[in-house]
Every structure is written in structure tokens, then in C-alpha cells.
Image (tube, rainbow, N blue to C red):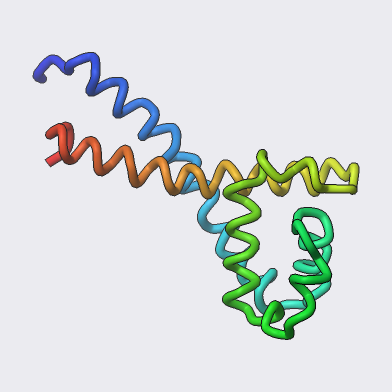
Length: 126
């Protein structure tokens, strides 16, 4: 077995960590997004009230209820959650845990893609 370079290990280790979390997160995430987009509108309205900058402006148009807009909005909330979490008014640990879980999942998706691309460029994987 050829000896690995130190930078290969620096690339492979986070790739395995983020990739592993991505695999564990992806199945529940599909269910979460389906329930959020296709179920009762109250769920996304609660998240909007917690994290949106201007809820009245957001809800002034009826297209905020379309499923693709709901999923897009929720994805943006999750990706930027640490930056916008100061807006939330609830002290529910379940809501915070739910948002951190999805924040880590979406960023695992993004970072796994970047790490695989870098590994391909540097010849770590063929």
C-alpha cells in the first residue's frame, strides 16, 4: 500500500466526517422537506415567524405558500441559521436542535461536494 501524503489525510478525514453525516442526515431530510412543503402551512409559518426578517412583507403575496418556495426558504434559513438565529423568539430547545441538525446537514452537503472536487483535482481519488 503506498504511503499517503499528509495533505491527502487532511482532505480525506473531513471528507469522511462530512460525508458520513450527510448520509445519516439525507433520509430524514427528504422526509422533513416533504412534510414541510406538502403538509399544513402552519409549520413553515412558525419558522417564518421565528427567522424571517419581515414576516408581513413575506406573507403579503400568496406565492409564499407554493411548495418550491417553502423548500427554498427553509433551505436558506438552514444554511444561514447561525447568522439569523438572533431573530428567533422561542426558547424551545427542540426548535434550536432541529435547526442546528439541518444546518449541519446542508453544510455537510456543500462541504462534501467541495472536498470531493478537491480530491479529484489533486488526484487523491481517480
